[in-house]
Image (cartoon, rainbow over all chains, first blue to last red; front, side):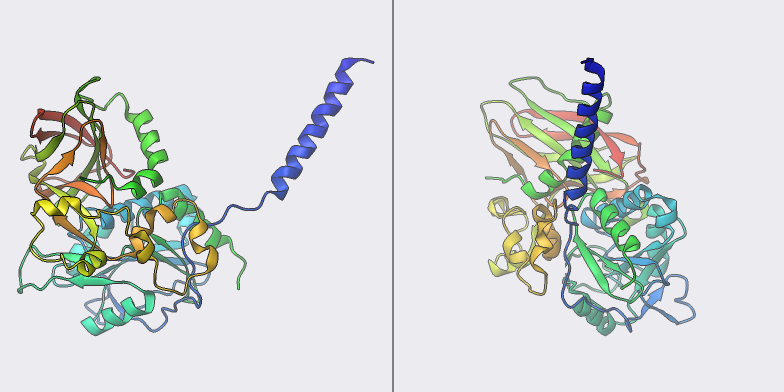
Length: 209
Length: 209
């Protein structure tokens, strides 16, 4: 018996088994949190940095087949907010331009007294190219309603008009919203960019419900 | 006793490792064995106009003596001043009745900076059973809590420990930013320790801290 065929068939069996094991291994769980029922954002309206002059309201529902990645924060935040923006930026790079083009980041300010439309625009454009939404709620009641609908918790320290320094406490979650206006998954601050990328990719590639 | 915030450290360890490998040549570690050293100093990209930035790093106290970080500074071309900050669970803090003017109090050091509040952070129902099974998320559940930020007067660095300043935990806050911090930028940061004196390190700006 020549050794070569034996080795070759052994190798073939090995490859087969290996392939089988790979195929049978369950998909790793997606990170993040899914709420049941999924929060619905339809009907929530925000002032867009582009449309604020016109007074029309933008909602968070993306075009068909796309996703909105929504985060509530404030611009004077040194830690969690810009970190999340940088993570989303990296995640969109990781999934590649074709998939990234089907997502847009929406930043909703919790601090409208300091974060005017032009500051919001400058902030978002620091992290992202054209494709972002820099949003303000039209009034405090609308912000409260959006926060309640999505489960955002926040508290703005009392301040005088024009005051520069005051505290904003808030939960720091990115909400993945599909074209039905449903929050399909949410990721807390601190998730690595790879987690955002996996979740976004899975949501984009999921068969239509 | 200053606790090391564990969640983000765990979550980002792989990224941090990559950063260490990639930037090893750029990092300045000012110590050898038996000394107090500052390692892996990094800052996240931040636009100048929002005025704030954050620096993260590891402080390795390889000596037999407790020490404290009491101050930090950068050149005026980077920022006006640097404060030692912690991100904390604002809801937990309110529950403890410690919300008010103790931000500069020594006691702030003893409170749960990040690591322990996770369970109650996830207390609001409506999530599916396996929601928290995803890797990385459990360790970063603080994103679901309402987080605040406050200045602390000093940071304890006990003998024989490494204190990691990480997103969502302790950080050095740059105030009155004098320049955009773009990925790849570098600047010098001087830390002042009660016993060990000054340490100057090079901070690398990244979108992946």
